Image (cartoon, rainbow, N blue to C red; front, side, top):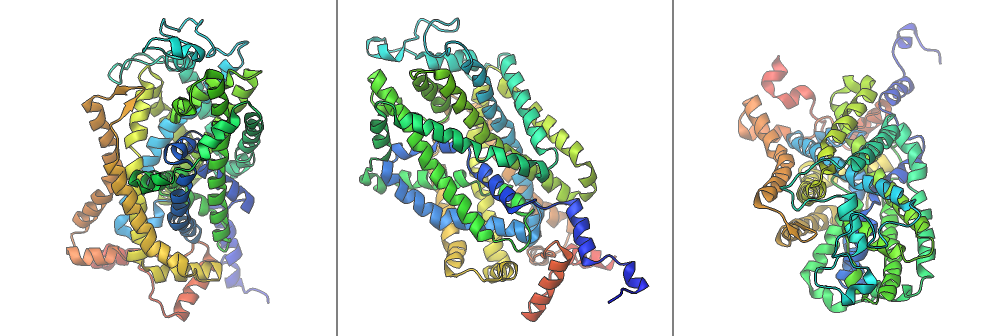
Length: 592
């Protein structure tokens, strides 16, 4: 049928979709989305935290509470965030159209991401520095003959005959050469220029990968997501063929069933599940917002979570096979050489590698793997910040490159202080306080908003329209009851079992602890502040304001054709219309 002259002046639904695609964009393929999510969910923590946590919390027995947490909370929370992003096609601030009064949570997410991007970029700059040392003719952490070594330096084979104040060559190398660490956080010192250069290189790489948004991130993910598995497999083959590897692997998996009676073990399992998968940061919602509307989100979510769990266990085998070898060569029990965090990645593991033939090769592969595991997380977090700003201030979309450049320069500037002699103390402080509790609070707000304010039935109806099938009873029970209970459990146990912060045996002064707590408050404070701001600004009665701003604001698909079909679907189900902007502002504004 031919279009009339009047119709020709109006854009078709297809033309509207094309225009919107040009403004915001979609993933070029489903593969790019899945690979980016895999790269985001799988990070350095899978290598340097999970293996140690597993052995410390009962070995194979730890997998029981961990898998329960993944099934009952991890997958439902991950899936819910994918559904929210895919349905709304908006980032982690605009998603709070579901309950406009809670929009301060979106600001909280952005601040937490800024903190994390700043200190996490420093963490992944360490492997770049280590790559340089890995190319030396003799790896410098193998002996006590370097310029930075002290009289307390003792090779691991001579520990039994050493004094109480012995320090291994690898420990002195990392702290006295790489970090050039000061005595405490109070002694800032000067900038370690080599580390600053490595940080600059890291940010140049990050900028090059995110400058074109998901178009570049999606393409980079084809390399950064699968390549670490190749390196991990090479290290696995080498590790399991080393003498003593079986002892280390057995130590990793040996179940101590009585540990299941310890509440701390269940707390550790919940926290590892939570921070291993990455909900609450906005990254999952943001990446899903670039999906096609009817994409099979359940398959993607379950696949990524299962790959994450597999990777954690796989990495544990790789790490403990090498630690078993190290134990055999040094004569020290596996329990005494097993550590976590930076100590594992930059001290213990390199020390074990140094005892292998061609240590330069294995060190190079290991540090390349760490860098690639970490950089994907920065991509997604930085893109979440950028997209949230562009969704709120759409006029900036034409200046996206400028905005991305500004964010990279700003984050790099914030990171410079962590390249000083006290840099590791500052990094640990923000890692300890700025994000952990904030993310749990954010997830609690999300689940309450979706399941109790918007309504479980309303959310299930949206999913039914989007995917063509209503989620079954498992998802309903998990989202409405189990996930909130587990989140409350994680929050309470995280506070109860929060240990006094130390680094390398050095306690932090009280003012530093206060600064750490302030970094936590600086993000979550925006949740109540925004509520008070709206209440004061609009000057309506408290009851009417709460009712109006806890109703969804135009919660419909972004694509015009999907929106029309969704509105027809709601009319067929006799569901009420959503609020408009003028209705949300109140009667006085509407009259104007």
